[in-house]
View 1 (cartoon, rainbow, N blue to C red):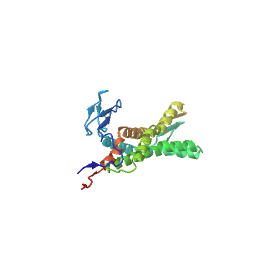
View 2 (view 1 turned 120 degrees about the vertical axis):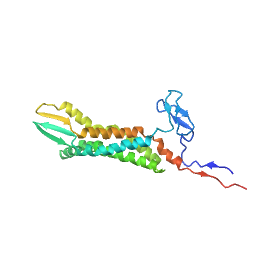
View 3 (view 1 turned 90 degrees about the vertical axis):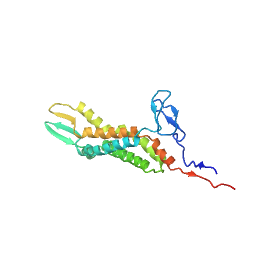
View 4 (view 1 turned 90 degrees about the horizontal axis):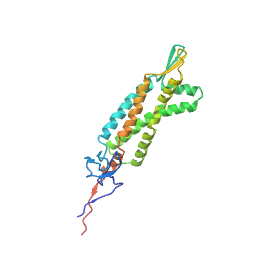
Length: 223
């Protein structure tokens, strides 16, 4: 009788006993278990997968979800005009640009400051849930989605860049001044948390779901 492992899908480097150093990217041979070895090139500790990647990503993405509410509900910008203070939220700014006919600017702020953070949070949570529930489908799509989430992460800071620019340019003393409002640090926290959640996540865990779903098939003995 002969036992044979069916190669259903792809074979991961972990199954082949290979690991990649995150410092110098050298491929290092290991035993395929969750134990670290020392990289012969740079001396760093090499693991088959990033240690506690799922737990760290969950902690950061939940943090960003909590911070998302005050970031959108509280005012993000304060404008002092002739001694009178006026506060505006992110949505107030978007509505203002649409009313003034500046649809392009309003759409850019809507996408970068509202839709992108929400998409990143939902996308990362979907990937994490699919790993924990061992969902083997759409592996390539989930990998591409994660790469896209990681790529667009930095563009979510558009609102903060605009406020910082206006704060430096619009400062006429008693006449008019612009400053950041309470929502600004919360919004920065959302962006930073999602960026860190994508950074600590190990994309190879997506493909590990396929290897966990494989079964050993023992063919019938031939007579």
